[in-house]
Image (cartoon, rainbow, N blue to C red; front, side, top):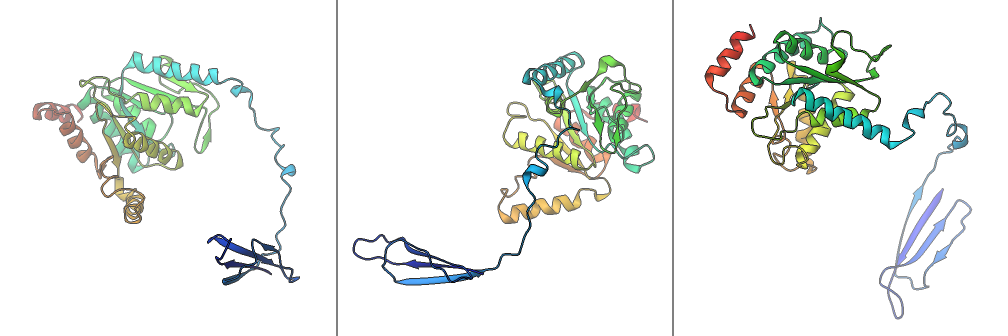
Length: 304
């Protein structure tokens, strides 16, 4: 048992702050710091369990299985970021889809994403960008390809749930995607692909259902919009696709953040558009970019 007692006081020649500190252990040993003036004291008992700590030496040096050779120079990361920018410059900016790599062709969200990717590509007539992986990323890519629109991607060596045995995409031509070694470069590419340099650019970020990686990317985009790193001159729409109430619990948590004061009232709602289905997403993008009813009707007709 440890007892900590603090004695407060003031007097001639003593400050008005803490004057006494007593540390009392189970041996009843007192240690006094400060002057001898005593006015008030308080104490508490702190019970510490008998914990056994492992030495850091046992694990801090065990990195034989980790390969750090690819990070020998920051210039390698810089070069890969430049390659991402070159690919975007060649294919054009457009709509970036963030979503799960685990929801395959048999999943209802895969079907919805395929339809959404097809219709948005037709509506906005822009490049479709993804992480060039499986799951919902694949659904958006396939939808855009069926619409006859350009696609691009930033592939990574590993997607959640699977290790890729090759750096090559199974069906995209090599000129339309880049296999990134660094996650930071991949993120730079996904962000830059939606930055609008002129008013005629039609871009967006579509956040589909997903797990940890998707949430990481979505909240990074939100923070960049909040800090005006994206859309400071020309706004970029961010759509959260709440298929089958997938994100409803997350939205409740963010409402609690509002109550706690960690975000301003209405701040989160101003950063994105919550869409429960594809029709809401298409209507929002059409309104955002001021598309005429004829264009919207033509899009619907072509997407059938």
